[in-house]
Length: 467
Ligand code: ARG
Image (spheres, rainbow, N blue to C red):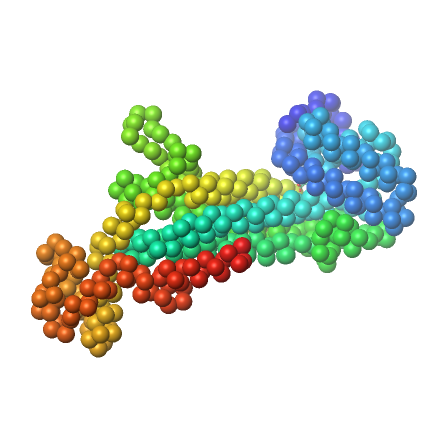
């Protein structure tokens, strides 16, 4: 941030009319937001152009002044974009930095821009526009992540892996099915994003300080010009509402939680002990001391970013809680939380999309692991229900005895000789071996949403049509 060093004793040129002297240096430091809200420059200028255009259309300012204002604002836009703009902390924030520069560029006409508005509705507008764009970007990024998962799921619709509960081998599933679980999660995140866009799609400009204005403004005109569905309905709520920012943060926190669970799985899967996946060199790092290591740093950092995002959500909820209506300066603290969370979320989604696309899946390791831990015990119990007519509870008991026997012999269920099985239950025939393999196990789970390859393909087709 470039500080300007003009006399701090002079009162503020924007609101200093009733002030005899300027702010204390500490006051200036705690008050200024330009260090972070300069990020809103494009939204601020867009908003001002729409506002000035509406003021002229309504005859509140002259067309001549409007033209000067619009021209000046466009000049400022290119100055900032090309890095030729000197931001001043004394001018507090982006709104006053732009307006002061406008005054230098076009003279007295600049003073007419702030007619019928306040920084309270101005900041609400700028920030809403920024969050809306960020949500649109997030929506696209989630779509890309979902696409990466759909490709992996298609490729591995038949690859068998162990499914876990309590991180203990439970039943065989397909890797495609596991990938599709993440498609569901990120699909929900994306619909939350879409819903949030719909929620915030109301224009705040024209609420003025809090009470609306006596000037004959047209809020529908500015709403339309700025791409909002309609203007907000209550001026007090408009300048005191930050729900759109909190919704963004809660969506980010939930998506972050999903990304973090995926990150954790990738960390586990890429250990030599599991060996289910191998990360590409592009998404891992080596150790400076242990040459054999390949560390899943990107996944670990995605897991950690979730902590930051959660922190931002809790921070903004806490900033807003207990604030009386309407605007309070506390609300200025909203932006850094959202900016930081947005950056973390973007990075996390991008890194995950890359990792999922690039990782090598070791189907042999997955299949071997799927068969261990008596993962087809439920299939044996189900066979006993189906073929031997046992009630499920009895079948569960018989299967438990077979598992205990296999355990004592140090073999798999499918390796127990028929005589051993028949000693437990004489009705068992050699047909039972047909359900004890992991392939048979997954192929049998054809219930809607189940892990059978045919079902996984159905899920993929559903999401392909939606994505
Ligand atoms: N920088 C301020 C913010 O971010 C702009 C609004 C200031 N409004 C005011 N009444 N002081 O909230």
